[in-house]
Amino acid sequence: MQLQVPVGKQARFIVEPPSRINLLYGSWRSGKTVGCNLKWVKDVALLPEGNMLMVGTTINALERNVLTGIKRLVGDNNYALKRQSKVLNVLDREIWIEGADKADSYKRIEGETLLAAYVDEGLRMDKKFMQTLLSRLSEPEARLYITCNPGPPTHYLYTDYIQREAELDMRVWKFGLDDNPWLSDEYKANLVAENPPGTVFYRRNVMGDWVSGSGLVYGNFDRARHVVDAPPHGLTPRELRIGVDYGTHSPTCYLMVEKYLVPGRLHPTWYVTNEYYWDSEIMAYQKTDSEYSEDMAAFLAGRWVAPPRMVAPSGLPEAKPEVPAQRSVPTVHTDSDCAPQLNGAHSAQRSVPTDGVVCATRPSAALGPASALEPRRVYPASIEVDPSAASFVLQLQRDGMKRAVAADNVVLDGIRVTASMISAGDLVVCRSCPWLIQSIESYEWKPDSNQDEIVKENDHCVDALRYFVNSIT
Image (cartoon, rainbow, N blue to C red; front, side, top):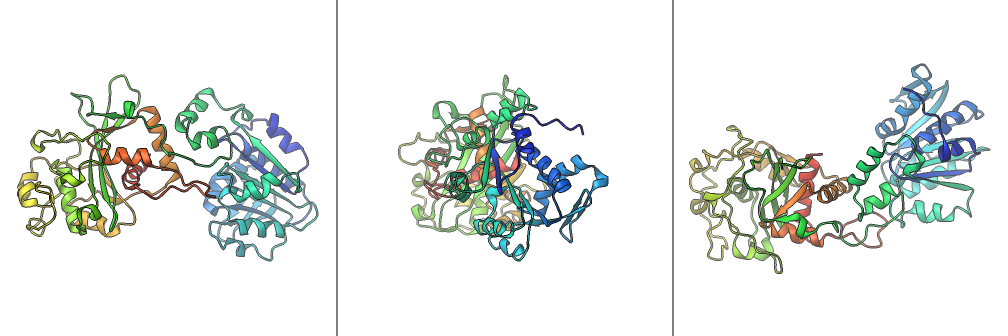
C-alpha cells in the first residue's frame, strides 16, 4: 500500500502540538481516522515512557476501523496484536487495547495511569466511560484523541466538550469531504445518493454537521412519484421477499416486495405489491402463531382478503381489490420442499370477526384444501421476521416455510438505506398497500432526544419494510 502524503487540515493536525483533548469529527471518509493514525504512530515513536491505550466499541471494531490501518503504516514486522491479553505492540512499544460497548465499561479502566489514549467511534462511548478515561490521563503531556461521526447536538460530546472548547484544554477539528483530496467525484456523488439531501443522514454524513433527526423520517417520500397502481405491465418479477413485523397486542404486518428489472433503469426496482395487516384491537380478536402462519400461507398464495375494517385507513387511497384467480403470483423462487402447507389443524373452521367477508382466517372457505396450493408452490427468497418473534419464526418453519429467519434489526443504517432507495426511485409502493403508505407518511423522529430515536407509533409497516431492506444490503 502506497502512503498518501498528508496535506491541508490533515497535515496541520499531525504537525501541530496536541491539546489535552483532541476531537476529530466530520463527514464520512474525510480523512480524520487516517490523520489520527499518523499522529498516534508519531506519538508511539516519540513520547517518553508511559502507558498508552486504544479504545473501540469492541476490540473487533477497533481492529477493523483503526488497527488494520496502523499495521499498514508500520509494516508487519513492527506490529503484533495479542488479542487474549488485550495488548498491541507497535514499534516495540506495548499499547493496551479495550472495548467499551457497555454502560459499565468504565470499570475496565479504573485504576489505570495513562500518558495517551485514542478513542475510535467516540459517539458510541458512554459518558461515564469518557469521564473516567480523562481522569486516568494524569501523566505530564497526557493527551486524548477522539474520532467520531457527528450525531445529535444534544449528545454529551457536543454539549460538554465541543461547545466548551474555549474553556477546556481542547482542540476540535472538523473534517469535510474536501479535506480528503483523494476522494473521487464519483465516490462523492455516490455518498450523496446513499445519504439523500433533505435527510438527517445528508447533514451528518456528507456535510459533517451535528443535527437532530426532526420531523418526518422519510420526508422524501412523494405519492406522485413513489405510489403506483402496479409494477410495469409485461415484466416478470425476478425475486420475491417478505418483511414481517409481529405484534402480540399490537398490529402484525406482512409486506410482499418484488424485484423487477425495469428497462432504462440502472438498478433493480423493488415494488411493495401487497400487504397483510391485522390489528387485534380493531378486530377484537388476538391471533395465535399458528393462525398467523396460516395467514402467511394465504398471503404467499395470493389468497389473503382483508376484512373491511382492515382494508384502508381513513383518508388514504382505497386499495384496489384483487381477485385471487387473476393475481399474477411471482414464480421465480419455487421450492417444493419449502412450499407452505396447510395441515389438519389449520383447516379447522373457526369463528372470528369477518364483517361478512370471507377472509383467510377461514381457510376452508378462502383457501381450499392443501392441494390448491400445489400448482403455485410460490416461495420467497426469504421471510424476514421481527427478531423478537422467535416463536413465530419457528411456527413458520414447522409449517413448511423454511426460509423464515430472524431479521437484521439494524435501525439507523436500515432507515438510511431505505431513504436512499426512495430518493433513487429504487423502492416503490403499490396503491394496494395503504397501511404502509400511511406509516411512511407519519413516521417521525422523536424531538429533543440525545439519541436517534423514533416516535413509536404506527411504525409496524415501516419496521417490516426495514427488515426487508436490511436483507438486501
